[in-house]
Amino acid sequence: MRAVIQRVTSASVSVDGDVVGAIDPGDGAQGLLVLVGVTHDDDNDTAAKLARKVWGLRILDDERSASDVGAPILVVSQFTLYADTAKGRRPSWGAAAPGPVSEPLVEAFVAALRDLGADVATGVFGADMQVSLVNDGPVTLIVDV
Image (tube, rainbow, N blue to C red):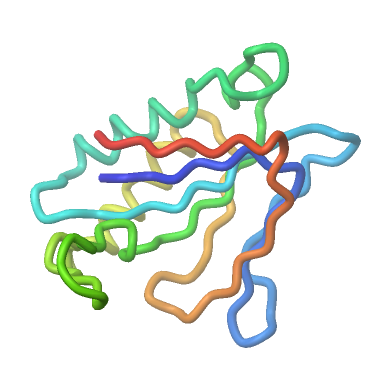
C-alpha cells in the first residue's frame, strides 16, 4: 500500500457537489489527509501496518502524532498513486489493484485506524471526488509499506 499523507488544518471531499467526508480540527489544530493506493500483493496485514504507521507518525506540531493528540484523519482512495510514468506520456495503471481487491483493503485500513482510536472520515470508493484542503506547513509525505 502507498499513502500520501498531508498535515492539514482542514480537509473535505465532495461527490456531485455534496460533502461526503470532512475534518476540521478547529482553533489552529491539525489533522491528516491520507490518499491511499493499493497494489496487487497487499493484504489485511499491510492495511493494519499502514494504519499503525499513519497513526504514529510524529508530523504534527511539537513532533506529536495523530495518536498523541487525537487528530482527525480524512482517508481518500486513490488508485493513481500506483501510476507508472516511466514510458511515454500516458500513465500505466497496471500496478494498481482492481476495485474488487482494493476496496476491501481501503476499508480494512480505515477500520484499523478506527480500532487504534482514530476519528476517521472518508470519501466514496471509486467515485469522481473533489478534495479540498489547507495543507499546513506544508507537510506532505509518501509512505510505502
